[in-house]
Amino acid sequence: MNLSVNFCGVNFPNPTVLASGYLGVTGSSMANCINHGCGGVTAKSLFMEERLGHPNPTVLTYPGGMINAIGLCGEGIKKAGHEFELYAKQCPDNPLIGSVAGHSIKDIVECAEIMDSYPVDLIELNFSCPNVEDEMGRPIACDPIMTENATREVRKITKKPISIKLSPNVPNIGMIAKHAEEAGADAITAINTVGPGMLIDIYMRRPILANKVGGIGGQGIKPIAVRCVYDIYKNVKIPIIATGGIINGRDAIEMLMAGGSLLGIGSALTYHDMKAFEMITKKIHNFMEEEGFEDISELVGLAHNS
Amino acid sequence: MLSPKIIDIKEDYPGFKTYTLRHSLRAKPGQFVMVWMPGVDEVPMSIGWQTDTEFKMGIANAGDCTKAIHEKIKVGDRLGIRGPFGKGFKLREGDKKIVVIGGGYGTPPLLNLAQEAVKKGIEVLAIIGARTADMLIYEEEFKKLGCEVMVSTDDGSKGCNGFCTNVMEEALKNHKVDSVYTCGPEVMMVKVAEMAKDNDVNCEVSLERYMKCGFGICGQCCMDDTGIRVCKDGPVLDGVEALRLPEFGKYHRSSSGVRVE
Ligand SMILES: Cc1cc2nc3c(=O)[nH]c(=O)nc-3n(C[C@H](O)[C@H](O)[C@H](O)COP(=O)(O)OP(=O)(O)OC[C@H]3O[C@@H](n4cnc5c(N)ncnc54)[C@H](O)[C@@H]3O)c2cc1C
Ligand SMILES: Cc1cc2nc3c(=O)[nH]c(=O)nc-3n(C[C@H](O)[C@H](O)[C@H](O)COP(=O)(O)O)c2cc1C
Ligand code: FES
Image 1 (cartoon, rainbow over the protein chains, first blue to last red):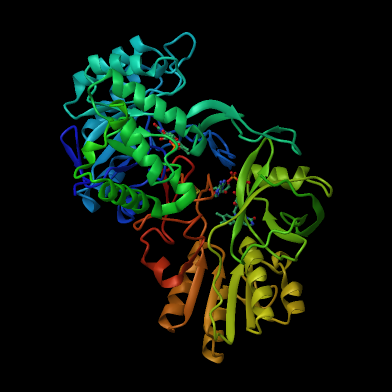
Image 2: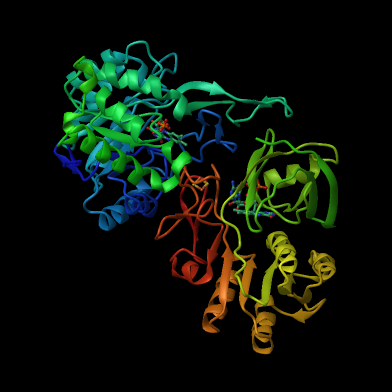
């Protein structure tokens, strides 16, 4: 039985991939995930500049999910190289995805150029942060033309596979994915967090997050993520890293059937901690055995046949 | 998010206050909570003394958030609390005598551990250090529990003159000690852990790193080179395990993730 995935020419020993922003601050933290059975990892999104992020509280759980406004903190792409090198040395067989972000297309391209020089196997473009060049400050991922332009510019400067991370907060995610594909994207990662949302503490009588609003992940967003992946699969030929609300093996199989080739694992950590990776892979393995599948690729997009 | 009421505030010395909150936390000694001061920040704090209905935290004024807590929070106000989080101290079956050693705001969790140890019939020697006699905390509380207390001050104004690690060296010579537990400045903990290792004594240290989520998902508090998470796999670690971490006693990371020596 085969659970390894050839994704844009990169071999992942199993379909679980650490989602960006989860445990991806340091090389040794990402290596720790591999030691717990994760197939490959995505580092935290990096900008050109060092960012302190928002003050705490930045991450909260609530029944049904998690809300975060970390504020994309990070040491900045220039200083982060040693973390990538450390990881690549410790885990040569587990692909590393570098995630870049920026306030404008120019920013993103500059950042991606530096990322290209690091030992990453794929480059993920996080188009979900507010864009200073857009008069509304909309994220790039909320506009098909901006997504296309940004993708095309990055395509010019790297030969490494690029995956575009899309936001679910649009009416037409399938169409946006199509524009990314046409501009030369090799893959799509979907979805980023839903929202924004807000939680209020009734005794303090104010929003809890220091940033007041934050993106929502976790169990509650799974149906949205499944639908988004389904829409994207229908619209493009490039493979998908299906992310959002996967907390157990069943969710993972659902995402494969919707059209995901790899599985972005994030909020499963809040339920099962580091056991999540092995647990999910094992469940897929058992399911394939029981249902008579030989290769994990047979599951991808299966729900579209009906 | 819990929002318990503050029912008592005691100033131990200028710059350090002990807050009593009405809430049954049922935490293990060594665990911590994230304390939210609305409008300012949310920071990790160890859990000190606990009863069935309340718990205490000893808070040093160390910056923006803790200063705001010291200045603005009065009896009857509330603080936001998430937790308890992390792995606490482990009292070993069969231990007869333990040493708890620390100073400053590392003392509250040691007091909570002493509480638990005494309940289990384990003899406790508390070694507490401070810069000067006025800054010694919880000496009376340890004594009331029935612990033997030894004190050291950097300026010699009370107890031993010098570092509390010197006191520990003596204690290890003169007593049969089964385990040592420490919380305080990292350089001190490195010394304690090394001394315990050299004397073949079980040791646990309580680490401190920048925290955001507090429950092991954001990766902000991870330590090189194993990537363990201080908030989830710690804050309490085995002393020998901690000594193997190249960053222990050497550097930590800021809120952006940049290394600080
Ligand atoms: C597990 C743990 C237990 C702790 N227990 C206690 C305790 O019982 N009593 C006590 O007085 N202090 C304790 N601290 C330290 C306390 O968290 C810091 O003193 C506090 O965060 C200072 O915040 P500030 O905004 O007042 O200071 P700032 O001006 O923000 O910073 C001062 C210092 O505090 C550190 N700090 C700030 N925010 C955080 C954060 N989110 N996580 C970790 N460190 C931070 C900074 O690295 C800096 O070195 C503990 C820390 C940890 C990690
Ligand atoms: C604390 C936190 C930080 C995140 N940081 C990033 C990030 O830096 N870049 C990014 O592309 N996505 C980031 N995300 C989004 C996740 O990668 C993921 O797309 C989303 O949370 C949905 O998955 P989930 O339901 O499993 O959480 C973050 C999510 C969380 C909860
Ligand atoms: S503070 Fe988030 S992982 Fe430890």
